Amino acid sequence: MQSVTETREALDSALTAVLAAPMLSRNATDAEVLAAVEGWEAIGRVVDARRVRAAAEVEWRSRVQLSPNGLAEQYDARDGADLVSTVARIGTKEAKRRIGVGTALMPRLGLTGDELPGRYPTMTAAVNAGEVGVESARLVVETLNSVRKRTTVENLEIAEAELTEAAGILTPDLLSVQTATWAEYLDPDGTEPADEARRQKRAFRLGRLDVDGLTSFTGRATPEVAALLREALQAHRRGVQMTYQPAGGEDAEDLESTWRETDGDQRTTTQYDFDTFAAIITAGVQAEHDGTVGTKAVHEVVVHVTADDLEHRTGGGWPEGILARLPVPTVERIACDGRTRLLVTGEQGEPLYLGLSNRLFTPAQKKALAARDGGCAWPGCTAPVAWTDAHHIAWWHRDHGPTDIDNGVLLCSHHHYLIHNTDRHEIRLHEKRPHLVPKGWRGPPMPRHRMQRHPITQGIRGTPKRM
Image 1 (cartoon, rainbow, N blue to C red):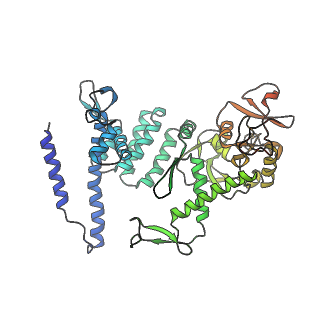
Image 2: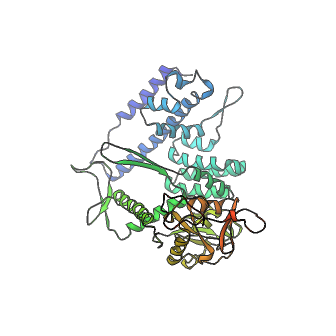
Image 3: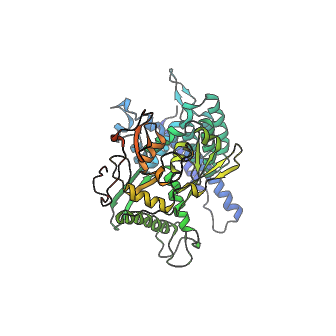
């Protein structure tokens, strides 16, 4: 085993050799520029493989079971990521990313202390050889980890080999399409639990006011919300002439090239998207304040789903532009309202049917439902009309329910999710009124099952009352 001094000398020697290489000249030919990009990237992949391995080893030696003798505790660090961040002078987020990839690829220890191949030896070998980058390895590892408990060892090994080969050829953006396809193949019935796990991670955080008077915000959107927001932003971009504008100049605040409007106020794409997002929020709040609701489906998302999956309520659908599967119950739920259309395909992916808007509640019908329900009809829910979707009591696809007011009820997104994606409740019409009963309830609904109607003058802060 090499001593610390020998290891350090070897690494210093390698660093000296790299620094001795000449910097790329502005007078270099096109071929020389591309050769430099390719060559330095190859070196970078080899270095990255060593960095993630070292970070994972720090995490392993800092595990809780070793307390108080863990490596991180010896250096007064909170955990392995904190120690890596300090030693490498990188952000904690980057340290955790390296640890995550390195842990998945690092070898295991046998009972005798000998090193055994890791969980994904094919990918590990490719990363160590500099054939696959860390970002691509992360995509493959996360995909295989998500399905490994619900598929066979043989299929997992085949997928690892195929995806490793693809990772050595494709960019991460194109590789993500391959990983999503393999995930569906390996775990066709895992869409619904995966969807619930994603839903549990949904978040929105409004940060603090900074010195510039701006407030940051972060969050994580579920696939159906991301698809709707993406379509809304792209819909507003359409028709706006944009031009590529390289970074630079005395007034440049960053070094990133960007796209700007060719005319008008010269907003960047991020500024334009922020203004669109702010306008959407403002319109929703104003509609809530006025007691009205936006009834025109301005932004429409298309979800691809096979006829077989839709018929048997298995598998899932794909929102355009989002590489995440939605279980069929979620597809049915978001198709209730006027913002989503289903593209039903055959076994070979051929389009069979694109849902028409006449199966959706019309603006006039939604206004009537808003006037009748006054908000979410789920007992005890205080969500106002602006936060609700129109739901078919007798489902349009499953029960062939009509799209009319008597078969409609307003539900907020959370309770709409519960109706379509869980088996705890169902809505029944009794004496021309919707009732919420436990799944499988026998006999007519009881008075306590009657769904609520908000008083028209209630507003968003009032307490719902049954009528």
